[in-house]
Image 1 (tube, rainbow, N blue to C red):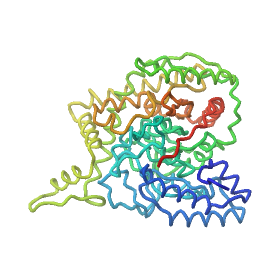
Image 2 (cartoon, one colour):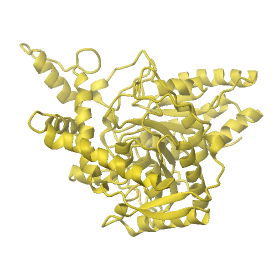
Image 3 (cartoon, one colour):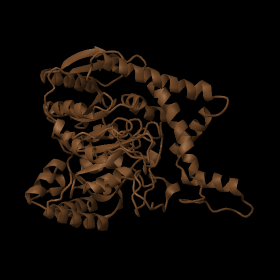
Image 4 (cartoon, rainbow, N blue to C red):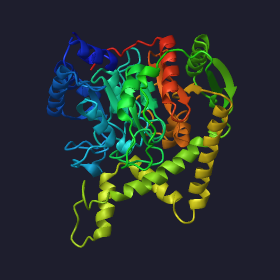
Length: 495
């Protein structure tokens, strides 16, 4: 078979079962594609030896007929997931040299399902960013370009390396994490599918923390079916994570019937924001029409506290980051600054953190420390927590009225150029999360589905938001939208 790296998870799985290819051949095809794509800077720690060892083991399991769901399928792992013996830096200088002696629960689940790790993927430092421009490894680059323009575009963030690798067929799928849109926004920017499951559906153990009440792992894939396959493999209850659920994990793929007749899809009026490009508005209305044609009922709904979501998020997330990142002090692992004679422990902390953390991480740590300080805790942090409760109630009220899912744009624009926003007001970058942060604040599942191209030839995505713990229904509605949209465009290879 030719172009094995371009297969979907589902097609590769079927080819393996039929004996039309082997995991070794699939893995070799991906490794070759990775080595030819350094211009994308998507893979930052390549692990070909581990990949080939696991591929050979997968072929042996397949030959014995003992093949779990993802047996032999080559994937990439975001650098936020701790992987035993492999650098796990969260794209930060402060974790330089850190090789954990343990495996994150999600990556272990994928190993147990037979998946083959090709390497670690680029990301924004500590997952803080919307453009993959805060990485110690340098920018990840979007494989898509604007027409004949050679300007490098962002693949989105923080899971930019994952999005770029999947869109460029360097791997069949990848893991991502989503704290305020970091799976869904890069998926939309690169024309792939990305799902953030309900908070607690995937264990957070072994995933380097940004904001613990918001972080959630999920798959980034070429199709909705692939997302269903990989999500099932990633999910589990976990005694090591007190926030993980002990609910049984459904066979998400079996729930993809494609029948959405009678489903009620909400269109929130508060997501119609002044200044939204006409193309985004059009693809949103087109998406609603597609779902209606498939038998769904489209209803207008109100989520009245939406306008407070971004301010609340940018109080809560930095506050939790400030607390989580206090552990990086140069004492036990990672980077330690060189000290001058007479320097004490305070100077070691200060110099290590100043050298190890990038500008964006330092900015958010300072914001978080400020809003948690004695004089401002009630004015900022407590108030933001109350707003979060109101946002969650907005969604609960909508679902109580019989709404099965909510359709919104995934992003306020298509991919922008690297460097176009980074030097501007940081708040402009934060506005990229305007359609996605509410889902994290409410702990809900959300999925981005590619739905079309803008006039520059760049992908645009639509977001579906589902009921808590109902990823199966959400994936089924997403599959219907995917089928109606018929998005099959791929970036022209320039790298």
